[in-house]
Image 1 (cartoon, rainbow, N blue to C red):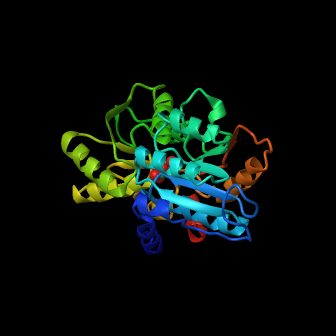
Image 2: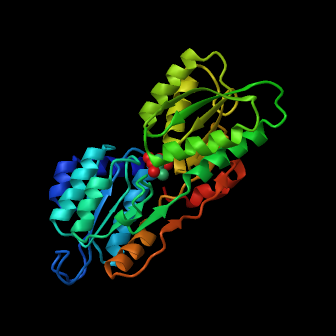
Image 3: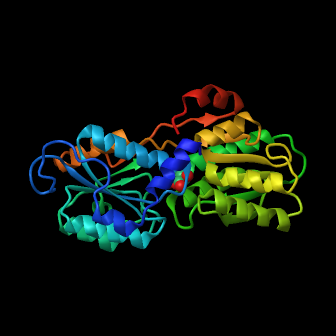
Length: 330
Ligand code: GYE
């Protein structure tokens, strides 16, 4: 995270209780502010937390685009806890917002609260992360990435990079938040691709909660417990950046002694790629705000929307990172 982003992220780490009482974000337009009356559409957004550079960029995109779309945003930060998100959603139902959107911290356990929203006739939009409920009537649409595909891309890079390697390739994996869609899917996509060749071995795999601090801590433990690590696969950039500190602390050279592939494409990771400390980055786009506001307007007007909207994403090798870095917004 750049210094600027770091300051900004610190600003959004506020207790969920405080945030639930105040409508943070924008209230523009000339509406009464209540979801049931005329005027501005009120949107209750239950964010996961402020765990990563990706999340910081996602929050900013949502807040900025609500403002420019004239949508009254009520925003809460769940600090990576499902119970906080459920509380936030219940409070939005009580406040009778027009639309609820959220990025579910984990995949399961949403049916009860989403049924409450449905009974209150408040449409729900899922963004960034999906839920595993078979009841598709609990939400109008999903806007986000295909995380399985992202994991596959990381696996494809690896199999190409080590195509001619004669012996075992020992991989350690830093997983995202346990039970979250990106952790489950990125693991699966990667695992499916590398399974094609038995020389690829995941020798250790543990959650790093999508944070730098935890990524560093778990990598330190891996470095102690594993005698030979060739590759680190991190489910996000922040964990990879934390792991780089652990690798350097152990007197090894990240990007050379241990090759690194991660997912997201935040500024600091592209810089690390340019510096040769990360070897490959699979992009996951956090700038979902404008598309989300568009969907919010449509569902609040009762219009039909596609069941799933996927974002367009790319991948970065060192040359692509060099080109992209000067314009990277986050
Ligand atoms: O990759 C990670 C964040 O859900 C796609 O969550 C998102 C993930 C992202 O904390 O950095």
